[in-house]
Length: 119
Image (cartoon, rainbow, N blue to C red; front, side):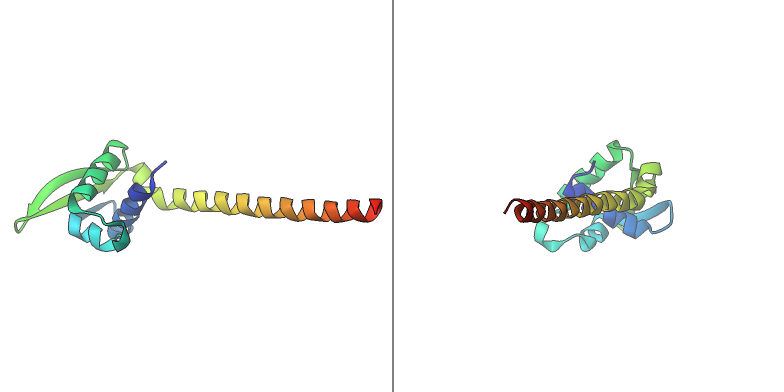
């Protein structure tokens, strides 16, 4: 399971790659897609990219283009399925919330019923 920072960076990488398996991005392209309030730095993004590479989300190859550091990112299976995994997690959370709300409503109704019966 990814933490919040890794998830945000993975969302940015997935957005930059789109439906393609490979993409050429710079750290600044990724930084532009991240929330400003978190205070990401280029070094922190590179560190998280390396961690995601170790977790087998994608291959990361360093390249140079016009003097700027660029990364060639090739998504692996888990990286390509990131969007689907996030949707499943959201559905699971929504189901748990709905189940909790339904349980609260049933408990409230049972309480009202018991109060009416024994009052």
